Image 1 (cartoon, rainbow, N blue to C red):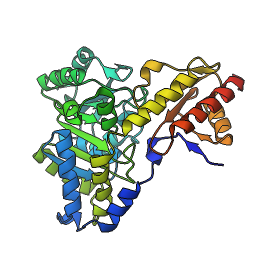
Image 2 (image 1 turned 90 degrees about the horizontal axis):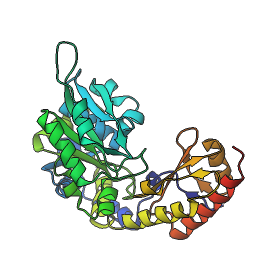
Image 3 (image 1 turned 180 degrees about the horizontal axis):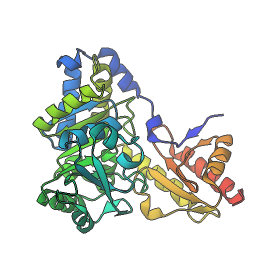
Image 4 (image 1 turned 60 degrees about the horizontal axis):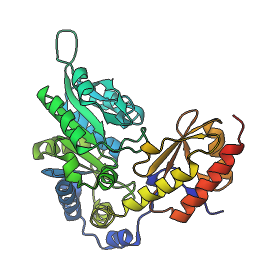
Length: 344
């Protein structure tokens, strides 16, 4: 059976152009600063994000953790969304590896209220740590792949900077946000102090993220990357894929967005499924189920559709380069049929 894999955009496989670039990539020892392909990727990523410098990272999770460690001291307070990736899916790394205290604000469909963010920023005193760093996530995974507009980012940045803190953006799917808003990535990053974006999701690379920010910050980050085991050697073979992705894969993300919308519209109003079309802004579709989510996921697997249960009644579908519009139509029909027939 040919499976339609909607579990995540991380299941994408490298393109033929990426595989060819790996074969001919010029490499050196990156820890010693000798890999020219890595240097080219880092410069390209930084330019696209509008920052001074970039650092190739093995993963988005390490990238966020290194950013937090580089902007803070152990015992500092970091403010982030209640459902932020760094809270829910990074195995406690802010506390375990950066030694920081985490506080939370609530967002609406992944979009923060700058007034609420400002009210949550805490001054250091005898009894409490001060907030030295705040995080944004764009697109916001748990909210459904929703985007944070540039004006909101600027307003949040103003509040954070007026407090004397820094602002980091977890832009794992930054280019999805930019495509959805019809903006350049640099516009969305103009007011944040640092940003990370993933190459291994919708951009189809086998591995990697790029952390971008001021040059002195990136030099600190390079040291913490080494400390956490992220110093790699002839990694130009992977960086070459990132260059192909940044130069040629960004625009096609619009296809993934269109396919997600196509599937969501097919599922809207189906018995046994709840779906908010307003949250379908990029390449994700989140469903609430009348039946237990894992029961729906298991039934779909038997019918050739792979997806993930994220919660007892919540299922996530993610479109990407390796699923076509026709497959999304087929998946939508299968999900509708099975969900309508499952007992609550």
